[in-house]
Image (cartoon, rainbow, N blue to C red; front, side, top):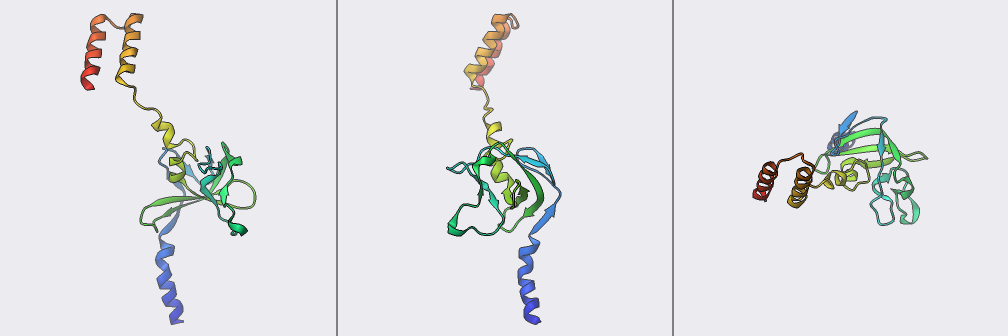
Length: 165
């Protein structure tokens, strides 16, 4: 009996580090709730499968992949559980999701967003890079040519852009 209590006491930190929650605002700005559908992008593995969606079922013989296959590209998965996991030292959020079929999958949501396996993803906002100074001057020139800016306004804005460089 004492051994059982000691073992339970030793294992307690492992179980107490993970807690179930009902919603999470991810790094892409979307607040996910239980039973929401997560929009999938493209798998980031070389074969097109999803690296951050891993099957939670029984181990597969022959070291076969447990990743969600590329057939789910642009599909969706339903959130069954949201867990806050702090065991690795860094706080991570794990979604248990259901794509259909027999097994549920584990999804580390913020890692998947970073890899664009989940949409909207981090790269879609990063692709909206600020325009170069030359692009901004061209826009000003178009406004000047259309009559929306006077020559003095055009020159003042152009000078301001060139000073910021």
